[in-house]
Image (spheres, rainbow, N blue to C red):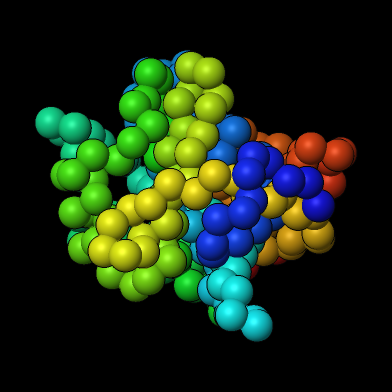
Length: 196
């Protein structure tokens, strides 16, 4: 496990390494194409001994993410597609937030995107991750106290994550990448895709 930033805030956020790798891939694509990219976050929330925890173990690319007047556009069709892919690749998973990245992104959601977040994710402790693709800086926000509050840090954890690996392979094959190798921070895994 690796600590990133000040993790004294509550809730504690844990992001699996393949998810972090997927964020990086989306960010690199966004920087290259100068278009926003995004993902729905898959995970779970837990509470133990008066401490709250968020585990993000999956991410599903937001199809055709657009931005207009500073607002990200996520319509019913995009939401439905995300829910379908969530149940296909992460059977027990729940969408608990979203990730956005783009060139020179202001790392603050602004009132219009706070409103969108509250509409899509009204539940307490849902997450928004914003990443500036030009410098790879990211900020985590959590829905609490009626607003999106910045969280000073998070943990990256490492485990076998076949659901995320299979999603990443399928995503690459759909987009013409064709590779059956997925690389995390500490090495690559060769998998066969079963067409789940």
